[in-house]
Amino acid sequence: MRKWHTRLACLALLALVWAMAAEGAEKDPAGWEMETYYVGLIYKGPAWTPGETPEIMEIQKAHLANIERLSETGSLLLAGPFIGGGDLRGMFVFRVGSLEEARALCDSDPAVKAGRLRVELHPWYSAKGIRIDQEPDSAAAR
Image (cartoon, rainbow, N blue to C red; front, top):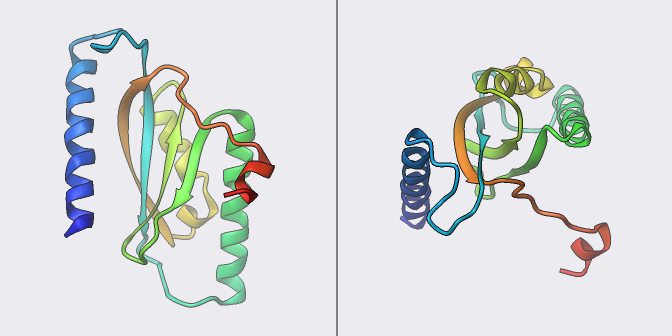
């Protein structure tokens, strides 16, 4: 039930932000400069199988390397898995020029190519330059 409420709240927020974007708002009501990002919700794909075989481990290794590569280019701002083991596996947040460009980046992922994952993309309107900066040592301190 809690998962449903969280998803509903996220959808309501996305709808509000989308409505603001559709109106051509350059600033939100609080005066923040706004920008369009692309959120990729990552689900189990048609070739998903449980367990860890050497082939699956290689695909996962290549998937993580692709995430690192996209992060280094600045196109991928956030990526990570969801906890709980359901069909929804993780999320990407891209800062690119178009939905098509975000789609091409998703399609370049080895786990997507292999059919283990599929990505559902959504334009997301948020504060310009939004990001999370974390020093490697601060992650260990948590």
